[in-house]
Image (cartoon, rainbow, N blue to C red; front, side, top):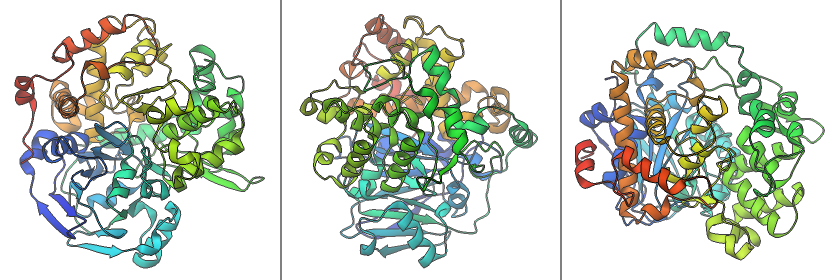
Length: 555
């Protein structure tokens, strides 16, 4: 099976040491990306670790396709113990980092320990340098990029960085790359903040050691370049009006299902503000959204659909420029737009202030610096909803994505059982329900489909393939690219999901955690069906015999 190559680089930021360890056997079993990082995290993060403690570890990993020039591969994976959910979380980001990471010759970076001063870490193909950067304390993400450019001659495509939110341990702080691309969900920016790591750069001249089969690589690239998909023009916002009109667009902190100003913040409105094409590394699809509004002097990348929801409909804000401002604010401060926007919406609900975009932006900034009400909101909805007097719209502590499980019942089931909580990318049942391939009504009989979707997405994040490339990187092409059957690829995904769940089980997650804050049909029975299909106990835990049969060794 095709897999990433290169050693594990372990950086202890407290001891200021860097150690390269050959992990060829583990790479053969896990391929790379999310599966590799999950196996390492499962074996090397103590089950009782504090997410903000030195024993927590953050993994940045690549897959074999990042060593190609194929479209839909300009992404990387990040994994760690989440301060938001208190379980394992993996998140991925696009941009231009992956090829620069590959040129350092490693397959995965592991950060452990805790520094007593802010650090910039510089990784090359033959060295690791530790730079104390007290002057960057409190710096915005773009300020970090300017420092790296001035002192190292490297652009933001060589860098991961955190903003003030990460430094101040906001539980949904993101890790940023290329200034505007986010390892967003789960708060890994706060994990780097707890370690006092402000940024890590990657540069080198190592030759990519993986050969990618051709013609699939070039066929995919050509088809991406010739595509006339709406997403190439409007990104994920192209579905805003369709979802609002035919399903549900959560509005005013989930009080309503439809937003009367959806057209003012949706795909057409965003496309009107788009001023050039944007892409990820080596990708001809170019679906990103560089936008600007000259009247307000705002320039950003996005917003994508989830941000349109989180700082638009769910806050009752109906002006796309206001959403753009919030998007740029979150990028600069280093925060996940979904959790930040929903948490601000909870505050607006408590103040009867829906639609007040100026207040929303003010509170967003207060969150990043933990000032005034921001100190409370920085903990996330699960930890502050009682103080606000609002409902707790989270699963496992994670705020909901836009795709409403009260209408898309398969997606609702996915939210309930997903190891990282209310995240739409964990199984993407929504894509089948929107397309009419799966009836959105009801939960029973959907468990087998959900299991396969989880495993497909886990392997997608392992390879690594962009979610938007599914129409191009088809099953038969995956089999050719990875020199393996689909069953073998899904088995890698299965191991990953089970290792995540087992880790979370050891931290107290069981049947009680697999629930929703609202009612959908037959949820309890559907969860039981999922447990049976996944081979779990009645309490939602992974049997030790099952774990032993699937778990690769990370030693």
